[in-house]
Length: 106
Image (cartoon, rainbow, N blue to C red; front, side, top):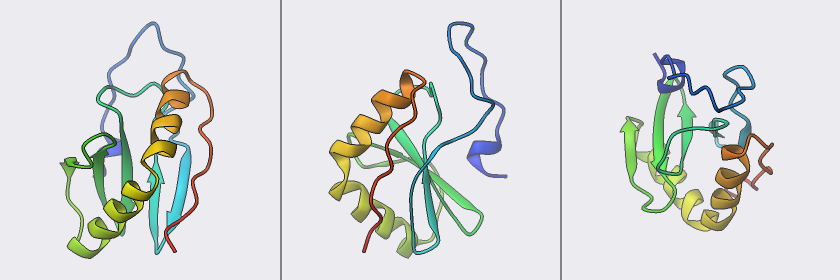
């Protein structure tokens, strides 16, 4: 089961857009997503071949989950390059606004 499939806690002050996670980027088969109104700390989800990790945007550390070493390295490389854009995406998603797409790792 992916981390994103776990039951999320309900917050009455939050507007939910189903449980959809907007896709921010996609590269080498890795999908980068972020929940609307998700819990702190600021983070994003990376999914690759049925594995999922949550990455803290500020520290670039894996908060939860597991992924192959090579895929995790690509995700972290991408995250370092796009930290400012990830922070902007977090701000938008935390206010239930559509975050902007972020260019893939090339």
